[in-house]
Image (cartoon, rainbow, N blue to C red; front, top):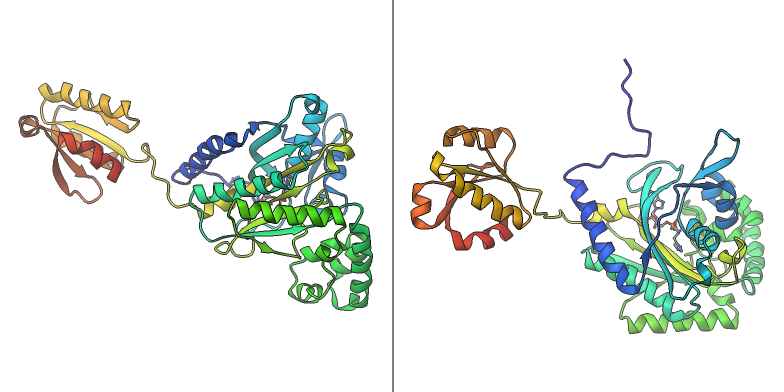
Length: 416
Ligand code: HAM
């Protein structure tokens, strides 16, 4: 019979990697509420129109990457490729915008994009992200950027770079796009077929092209930063100033246009030099028109989303109390109660401990510890009781040491 395997671009997660997921989830649930974010969970599928209108029909995501299907009532539903549009939809539908500010949400969950799988790029991937509604200040942009950057630092992701740009607004972008179109038309023949089409559909997307020749050519194209209106220019200056208060360094990156159409003003990404082609750990920015465009009030938004799989690739092994298994062996039956006492004290501290109440013989207990893949066996014998000590045998290299009972906590911290 043909073996059934997981769909392309998806993956199973199990130990030891799962420990990194738990670590990340615990950390972010501790970190983001500090900034007054409250968790929101939205459905995994939505009506297709939400993403068409929210993300933009000319984006790669909507054109090529959406998982859309018909349900039994012939509705077109889409597995969410991102969560900003969904959070906005949920806030409009549940009348959240009429509540008292600050309206700040964070989320975590699976997203779906039909793209060619490669390292750091999946068809089902996971994001966590935040959205702030109703705050137009440049300072909140800086705060959101800071929290995303600082969180990566807090979980020890190294070699990260922050890229910053402004993509302007409906007042200044059309003029920029006109100039961009004129310049790109002049070099049209040298651009790839996709970029040639983008000249007329969405020229900003030319900057997203990964084709080296297109990158080289578009480096000479006008930069949006030189076309910002007064309001966007002032906002951008204030964002940079506020970032300096948070003391984080950034690269001004005129090519950073983001892959989704809803952005206005601030756009940012954090990349890692250790990731290769898919180097964006997270990205986001301001979206001042999305809520209105999706049928809500004229309220601004700002946020980011991070790719969890990409962050996991960058995380050091997580030491978790429950990753290592301890077996407590007793030399003779009268010492079993001592073993239980020791096990209880370790369970109370959160360690993963096993006692076998049936095997009275020490040798058999050690054999069992070996068989079930135990990391350390703690041995309680007559000598240990007299000397108030514990013997610890590594089941990986069979080395044995004896320590004083009062040294046990220190040993556990260093070894488990
Ligand atoms: P995005 O840049 O499309 O933004 O995605 C954010 C992050 O999700 C990326 O930086 C990347 O780490 C991860 N990601 C995207 N696609 C994949 C994939 N196929 N496989 C693995 N990871 C992936 C958004 O989604 C916006 N909603 C962010 C936002 C929130 N803007 C404002 N608020």
